[in-house]
Length: 77
Length: 125
Image (spheres, rainbow over the protein chains, first blue to last red):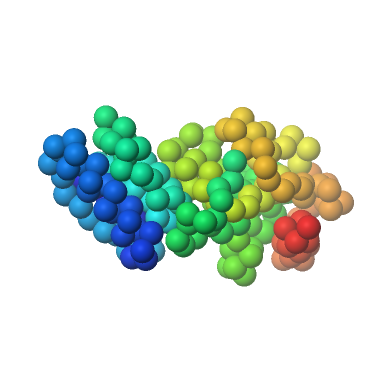
């Protein structure tokens, strides 16, 4: 089970990043859980100060951009 | 290495990296960076995270709009640290540029303000 975390305040770009991450996981047939972290102090605990950001299994994979589904697939490997 | 802001939904602040070295000028640089954060000029960020190549710190620094490096002295540890991590687009100055001599400058509020003022001037160019 992969743990996907979307770090951001909930704006359209954060939502798009979440959609892309879910699409990537589904395409790869990966079991996953999705958590949206919107509280700024919680986001900063990841060492992230620019959003949207994506973490997989607690590791920050991207910061400050909406990464495409294809790129996220490579992050699962 | 700073990001285009178009993809950023929040954040993208000026990140401030300061010397926090053992000498008085290091302490002044550190305190000035903290003051600049409190005054909302930018956000002090962890230079040790750059040195340690901590993934989230590196990625946040890549994604930010502007970087300011405040070194204490001519050893330029902050500048070197950033450059060796691949960051070459940042503003930079030294506390010793402001006629504060390493080892002979007491850490007073006036000195901290002087460095913070220089930081604001540097960022405004």
